[in-house]
Structure formats: structure tokens, C-alpha cells
Amino acid sequence: MKPKRILSAVIAFAISVTALTSCGSTSHPDLYAYDEDAPSLYEAFSQWFKVGTAMNTSDLVEGSEEMEILIKQYNVFTLENESKPDAMHPSEDVYNFDALDKLVEFANEYDKTVRGHVLVWHSQCPDWFFYDDDGNTVSADVLVERMKEHITTIVSHYKGEVDVWDVVNETLGDNGGLRDSMWYQIIGDYDGDGDKYDYIEIAFTTAHEADPDARLIINDYNLEWSEDRTITMYMMVKSMLEEGIPIDGIGLQMHIDIDFDVETCKNNVEILMKLKEIDPDFVIEITELDLSCFSWSDQSTEVELTDEFVEMFDSLYSDIFEMFIEFSEAGYLDSVVMWGYNDGSTWLNSYPVSGRTNHPLLIDEDYKLKSAYWSLIDLAQAKSS
Ligand code: 9MR
Image (cartoon, rainbow, N blue to C red):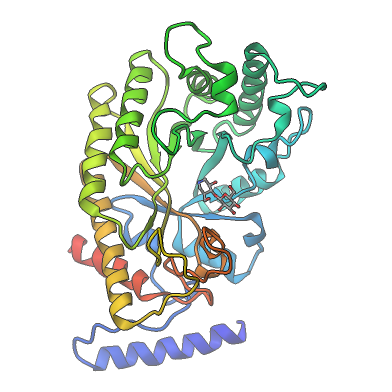
């Protein structure tokens, strides 16, 4: 046992004895997320949904604290960057399967679910898709062929192994309507039916042909607060489902902050879930949840974690998971994935302000369980009793 663990086991024991003898105390033991005595987040919510996290293959070192946290706390995994087009298919003839193979192997050993992120995106996508050797943009026919080859090769490689694919990511523009990406510009209205959803339609159809059993998700951000984006997404997916395009669900990334409004989110999810009228099995997934400690317009780099702030933060997390329980009970959702498993390695420490120290997750930078974590364990216990 590592020294840190012996110490924390001793502390945990001492605290649990104190808790037992202090009659009704609601304080929680001070534990590392990998400690044997620590609860398991995914087990706590297992009657409603799976709980996952983004991670990197560098976390999968046998016996490491990182890998033990992943095994104990989560049952769905998404590679944070290593299965994006620039990593997996950097040039036309080169595919890198090593990272996702490693995650699949881990998932098979520990009975976990794997999300493949992402097949088609405007970002982290190499230029070779869009240009020929002379630097001219390729034709729609060429790009469609390249996209089909890309999707077929990757999805077939993981047939029966990757359970869920983010097939297309961030198709909506920041200011409403479809994003003016290279995919959209070049492929356009390929089938001549008057809409320009064609690159999305071809992507889903191709992925479905390669693995008919994988769940296929269209993933996007700000759906939890923007009604404009929600309605655009709803209209677009409705039209595609009516044409028989095999889309199984919408991914709500949920990179949210302390101004998050539960009621607005519920309202938007109700709009999206009208898609069940077309496909009763249609779902939403929460794909990239984190809760920034800073309001969007706040440019500061530090936040003071006063008791009052932490109480507000924890109760917001609890309200959000209570909302997820409601979504699960309504048959809307069965998977909630956090965008990272500890505050030390979150992308929000450098975005949108560099040098920022954020605390958006449930486990701190030293791998200790935060009070927000405990507020969720308390919620799960209260709801299941
Ligand atoms: O967390 C990822 C970060 O390490 C990368 O630098 C960034 C580059 O685009 O992508 C981050 O993950 C994004 C995800 O793939 C799609 N939705 C938004 C996520 C946060 O930016």
C-alpha cells in the first residue's frame, strides 16, 4: 500500500468511528477517490443512469491511483482527445488505433462502456480531408468518399466494442443555424432535396452500416440553455429522422457554469424529447458535464472558495443530478459523462482565461472527494430510500 493510502485509510477509519459516535453527524469522511472506503459514484446512481468521465490513456497505468479512481468511480469512458480525427486519422493513409484499442481493452476487462469521440467535427480535423495535393478544395464527391472511408474504417474496427459514437460534433453555429464548416460548405445539398443536412445524414448512415448495434449520437453545446439552438437541433433531427436517418440520440455536452438554470434546461430537454413521437427509443445523453466556478463574462483567474460559495456550488450540482434522475425516470436519459475526473487536469484551467484555477468537478486536484461529490452521494441515497 502506498504511504498516502495508509495515511488516508487511517484517517478514514478514525473519521468513520467519530461519525458513528457523533450521533446523526452529516459530515463526510475525508477520503481519496480511490480509497477502499470511498463510495462509488456510478454505483450510487446505477438505478438511473451510468456515470462516466473523459480521460486519457496515460491514466491507464496498472495499479496507479488514476486507474483505480476510474475503475471505482465511473462506468463510461470517453477519450478526451485521442480518438478525434487529428489523432486517429492524421493523414489519408494513416490510422492510429492504439489509444482507443487500449481503452477498449480496459473496458472489456472491467466491464465498462466506451464512447467514441468523435468521427466528424470541424475542429481537431486535419486539412487533408478538405484539400487536394495542389491545395485546392476537393469536390463534394471526393469529400463524401473520404468521410465514408474514414467512418467505415474506424467504426468497423470497433464493431461491437465501442458502444456509443459521437458521430457528428457541433453542427450548429454559435449564432444559430448550421455551422458554416468545411463539411457543410463542400458537401452542401448533395442529394438535391433542398436541405443541407447531407454531410450529417451520410455520416450517420455510414456509421450505422458499419456497426448497426452502436448507439449513434449527434453532440452539441449550449443546448441546455439556448432555446434557439435547441429548436434548430430539434427541427434538423426531426427532418432527418422522418427521412429514416439512423440517429439514436442527442448529446448535450453541458459545459455549464454557476449561472446554470435548471428550469431552462428542463424546458429545452422537453422540446428535444418531442422527437420520441417519431422514435420512441430516442434519447439524450449528457456527454461532457462540468460546472465552472466562474460566470461566463468573469475574466478572473481565481475564485474564493468561501463556505457560502461551496454550499451554493454543491447544491447546484445536487439540483442538476436530481434533474438527471427525473430525466431518467421519464425515459429520456441513461448516461451522464463528466468532462474529466479531477480539478487538476480539467481543460477549464486554461479556458477561456489562461492561468485560471477552476474547480468544476467532483474530485479535487489531490484526488480527494469534494463536498460536491458527497452532495451527490447524499442525493442518491435520499432518492433511493
Ligand atoms: O478537453 C479537450 C481539450 O483538451 C482540447 O484542447 C480541446 C480542443 O478542441 O477539446 C477539448 O474537448 C472538447 C470536446 O472534444 C468537444 N466539446 C468541447 C470540449 C471542451 O473544449
